[in-house]
Length: 234
Image 1 (spheres, rainbow, N blue to C red):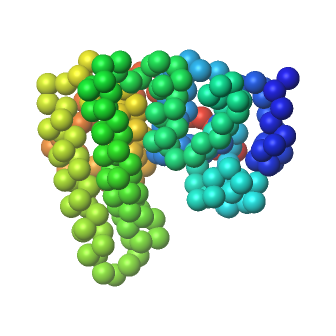
Image 2 (image 1 turned 90 degrees about the vertical axis):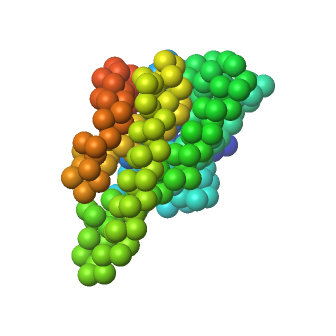
């Protein structure tokens, strides 16, 4: 039996299957990146709901795993050399899952680097900008009288979608015919723009047919559909 007692987070969220990868997350655009990757790769895992609506990611137990207080995070009892490894930051976890399973990342070194650069594009641009757009358009920020912040994030979000639109011209996925962690990193965020933030009209999403087609194809994948619901909201 694998022993996870060295990790305080495992005491707060006990493992029923400690020999499996442990996922600590919530179904946000960042959180579902990892659950989708796990479903696509077929790697056995156990999911634990860290309810960010109840500030559970700021508890000492979770902070022992991720001092930044953000989901998702993982513990893999079978890490490098067979030793447990803990990771936070969704992009790092995506890369770890892909490398561990030999899936979702091209074998060719140049295409591998190209895939990783698109993951970084999501981490540095799409995630922060789309998240701010959601705050100023749908959540508390919408009540701010000065609309310059909303306009700034609207315009930058449209620009980033335009980058994706160009990339997806003549392509099924970000990396041509190969579904990778680059697609996984962005699907939840673009889905949120359309279905959660209700920003389709604001951003003119119908003017980006390549992106909308890519989103539809991604959401039609059974593993993506499963991953979008993991973990349960609690």
